[in-house]
Image (tube, rainbow, N blue to C red):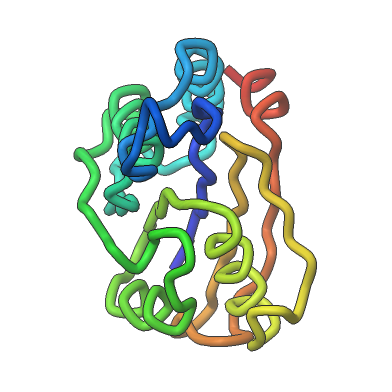
Length: 165
């Protein structure tokens, strides 16, 4: 299995007056433009046949996933609450373990970073993983996905991805 963890692109800052529900906070126009270019770079690295794309239902992650689907010609995202900020990494890992092939998951800090550490070391705090907004970490699995069974293949910043486009 190949798992790609994508942190949502640059969103507007928290503003309870504009977005009382933080889950509705959108990407900035610049964040959308830059991630669109990064997604074109990522499209060169992902298998063309596609796989499955999961996303947190929060607006900023969902829009990031939609852009990714558009630029890679993958199927649209499937909502997954286990990718919400603060979600338990064990829940996300158990869900993702039910899938094979290529899986892309779009989420948030800190849960996405903790999930990567959990899959690589067996502990959510077992490694300092930093994924920039719009960046991607690729974790490969020779066998079943589980705690500490992943192998870090690469971690790319959005700027690196844009250079591949």
